Length: 100
Image 1 (cartoon, helix red, strand yellow):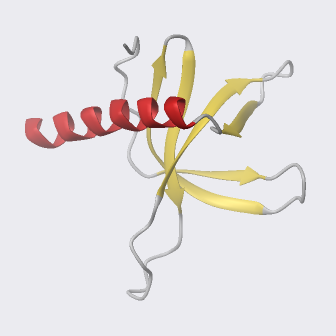
Image 2 (cartoon, rainbow, N blue to C red):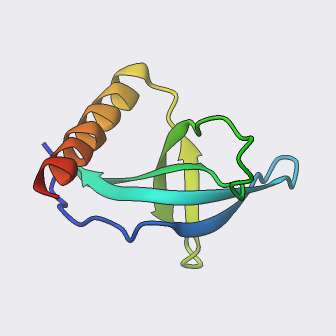
């Protein structure tokens, strides 16, 4: 299914800016992969660990470079596509744990 077996570096921090309202989101990138030519990023909201935060929820987003070369992210609204991306990520994650 996927054609990219690269794993991103752990704890890569990024700032996503919502173009609609200008709000900034600090995220930590867990993984990137490509399925049938579409690149996906797996990330979670980054907050410094002060001992009081809940377990983070992961987010999977589509990604591509725009005409100016800037990385762009988009929510996945198709449930089947999202499930497929999550299953692919989960398999990669599980395999990385069993190899450790």
